[in-house]
Amino acid sequence: MAIVTSRMIPLIATAALIGFAAQARDDGRYANSPLKGWFESLHSKGGGPCCADADGTALDDVDWESHDGHYRVRIQGDWIDVPNDTVITEPNRVGRTIVWPYYVNGRANIRCFMPGSMT
Image (cartoon, rainbow, N blue to C red):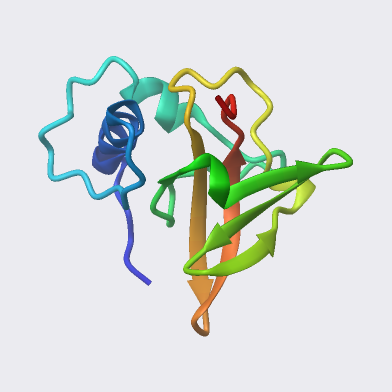
């Protein structure tokens, strides 16, 4: 599992704002993004930083859903239930749905999830 630095965070915002789903890998070009500090401040309810060891991915509306107050996301073709303690409840400044998956033995797990507006 690759260690992700806080330098990759602004790319997540940029990918979300451009309007396409993309794996976030910042090469330093977005160090001055106005959303950098906000992304770095995001933590799950369990206290873990969202961008510590996971890449954020902006999702299209067809790749996530909500039912009875619970979420699930589609990652690499598989639907995964989002644990409640990984849901970010503060206002979403980029508008797009973002998930921070990490992988154990090839299986995706969710570090953090921030729902979008579903527009």
